[in-house]
Length: 282
Ligand SMILES: C[S@@+](CC[C@H](N)C(=O)[O-])C[C@H]1O[C@@H](n2cnc3c(N)ncnc32)[C@H](O)[C@@H]1O
Image (cartoon, rainbow, N blue to C red; front, side, top):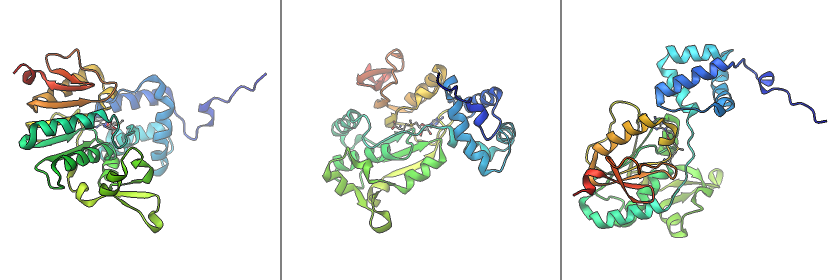
């Protein structure tokens, strides 16, 4: 007979009760719109325990009181609980669509917003396409990248990644857009300064009532973030984003985000690519 595993709760360094998990869930939903499923219980423990240790606290309930009372701790709380998976040219067909869009619109493009840019691979992939299409590191296009997580934004601004991140890029792109680390930095790459200068990063919580982005956006990349929100939140954000877009703009969603039912707002023009409905009718 196999041994019965000791319950994880008994091995835990800090007391973590079901009501602590419930409090985390409610707080994350309120502060970031993120809805955690029941299965995220262990993940919440392992992500927050590091912060509890850093603060020298002795229990989850004390930590959660601190989050409620201290606005500066909310940022750490959110940073610890976001999921930031991303890569260069993830879902490559979106970048082909961007290149075609730029070709069609020419100098008519002003601003591209990458709305949940994580550690930067996505906005730098956008910048590569823009630089190639305009044949310049100083194109007449602004690229704004944002995320709720201040830690990933710092990493994005640094532009430093493991060299393996370039595996999907052609040798020509690797050479043109990255510096290879030497000495202590062997095995790392840094995005070329000219490319980094094309992207401006800022912290934006998509569930906030106002966003620091211009109106009349040409393209919005909002990929693999809506899945963390409930449907009413998704629709509120989509409605607001569409109202900020030019009628002929592109809204690019993640692979598991489907807005085909929202035909009053957007119409599909490609695989998880949409155009504002008001522009499509013209
Ligand atoms: C899975 S990553 C997706 C990254 C990238 N868009 C991609 O598809 O490769 C999701 C990102 O959404 C961000 N996020 C979660 N909630 C957010 C919110 N309320 N406002 C802005 N960003 C949020 C997370 O911090 C995380 O970096």
